[in-house]
Image (cartoon, rainbow, N blue to C red):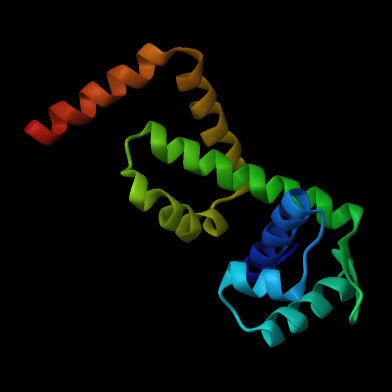
Length: 140
């Protein structure tokens, strides 16, 4: 099981490969706001743990194991963003809040949040009623 730090790297590598077709050490460093040397060390560890294949000066590719985890991590991130949006968290707080909580929830909790997001998406009136509740609570 990858550590939270490993998850951040896998998720970012997955996103870069999906959007650009490749992920370079410099791109990963920029996205995660870390030094390239830190990226190189982590990429070597991820290679050793078989999440990706890395060849110095040639680049990296995710293994099937890495792709599967990357896809699931992106899903988790997007789901938590949707959840926070539905419950009325202010837009400017959502990304940082997700970054703060995503590694601390079990997959069972993520699945239950997914159920709740689907419940609200199935009927827009539910979201409106939740907004009304929030407004009422703020006025009390």
